[in-house]
Length: 271
Image (tube, rainbow, N blue to C red; front, side, top):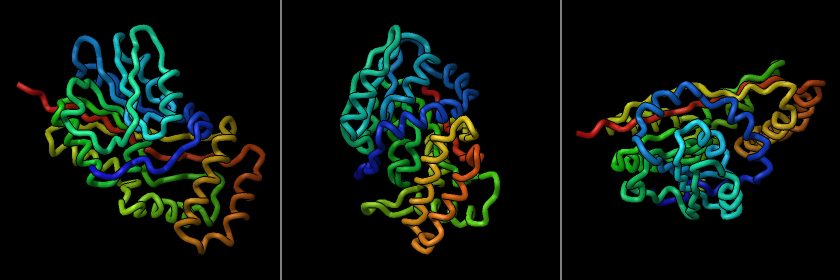
């Protein structure tokens, strides 16, 4: 893994807006097998692409006490926000600023669990394979949540929906800085990469289900969804403004289901 996975910068306001939807979407039924597989004693958790620390705030209360979190991010401002926000009895934190795609097995030595949220789809096939190799080499579990699945459902239906979705998915798979991103193919690629290294892989759906109570998130997500689609397919540009106005004009906003995948990889038992 040689290139930076997180060239895209996300403002903390967007991360705060989506945090409740991410928390509600994560597949909690992956936690019992995870907890059963974690080693006894203090845990070391490495959160890759931590953003403002939302994954830690969600997962830390669900883990046994005595946890040390190592937070990785390329954005120093987000890393500072994450470091000061992750608190709890028996919880300590170390920030690590840098390129998470350079991690190797020796970097994960002593790690109990690697986590990431909305991360896999920003990686290339080589980077996902490198992450799986590093986790397997270190013998640590991985919980990688909220990876885009390439499917969005909107109600009421609009004839342009499928064209915007297709262009958005192509944008997710685009070549960026010489890197071919996996986008909606990331969870399946990660499953294969962990499986061939002997891991037990479990996946679960983790959709956002956005309704009237999430109008702010729905509007912001929809604008970004359409903007990415137009960037990928400029032929959509003449229709984008009217499409957004139609979508946002309904009193309660559109109802949206954004499909994601959560993945848990448990390492092969060592003799």
